[in-house]
Image 1 (tube, rainbow, N blue to C red):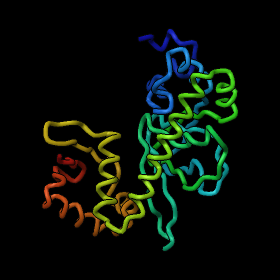
Image 2: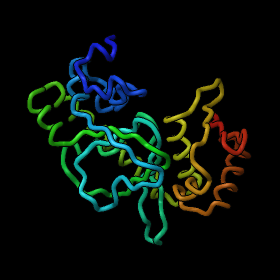
Image 3: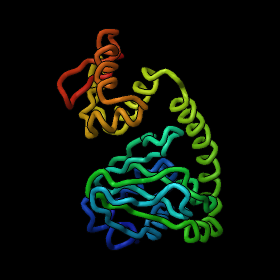
Length: 233
């Protein structure tokens, strides 16, 4: 495998402490080293302070956002006028991948939960790359199909009336993004508070604590401490 210094890539990517975060994006994971180098050359880097709104619901979007360091919450305002958190993005995760195929209006709001460095790629520059690379185009179309299926599952999860199912979905997402595998489950070091968990599930903070206790009694999870949960097999 080539080292970052062997790519002809954006200088900022070479000196970055989170080198080549684009490699972590599933849209690009099947690309060759040469193809990935072309994608990385399209990257621009941005910084958002904690609490900054990166983009708002209804705002035109034409960029892919990759979390280089920090975290971003993706949320909407529900019919009751309350914030509903859809998911939380961490290092190496991304949002706006489908905007690389077509500019759209954001269906949600993205907010920095911590000081966050983001790498972005515009769809204009990406399409210029696609027009010159058939292999990257084919890989992108295959990815778009899988991504749509994933979004359908997300809609199903957040639209269910069962708070337990929405909470388990959230824990699954956290386990996938930052969990540590053990012989009997996945340990999750929570980097979001009970309030944000409650906003995702659509219940009060008190209810989220009660739901966690219920899941523990059912053998679904183990509450190690206030900031650590084990998702049991």
